[in-house]
Image 1 (cartoon, rainbow, N blue to C red):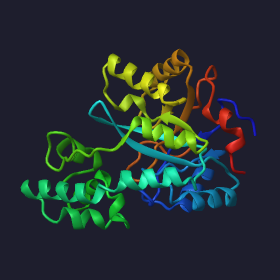
Image 2 (spheres, rainbow, N blue to C red):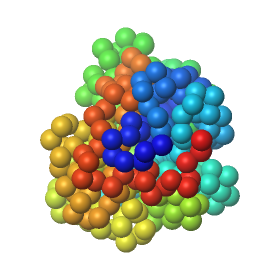
Image 3 (cartoon, helix red, strand yellow):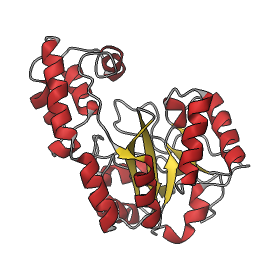
Length: 287
């Protein structure tokens, strides 16, 4: 396999193991149908689906990199760090992610109480219908409940009216530290990547602080082409990757056929002047 920037790699998507709606097996089939050749399943704060994803990739003729997306608290905000190519049986990462997930159920009950105060009852039980494990309950599951119960027109409408800072249903959660998340990934043999940097609405100074601290802890990559980035952000973060000497990644951030803006495999390729993260992980790819 040619591991240059033109490779159709999709290294960011989610299954039912976290907040996606498809199984790892169905995602692998969808990736193959979308022309993906190198795939990674990156469930939120969870690596329990990795063995299934490896097997599904093999069954569909896809090359595969292990993956996860870790929520971290940085400068009082939630930032996501994707890990790629690590040992998915790492005891340290498994324990760290378990601790990170641990507060989700308590937070979810607080979110439901906040929504009840705004006149929306039954939100915890309603959100739980979309997730098999309370440890993994998230805002996305509440959003699906709010849409299906008729309180909102669609998921974007939910996040305009609820579940964001200053709106009913928002409860902050202290996630992993940036240093810890990057450390778990790198000590398990993988590469840490800043996910969708255009989503955080940081000032240039804050973004510089994030990137430099990330690099200082051993982070090596940044998502350039991703589902939530605009074409101008593709260019901006390609320049950022070059400026800081970071490896470039690409992924749809696919969650659900009805909700996701971008399907698996349909993004434009990485700009050819960048060094793709998969080139540095050639020995970690499952075939």
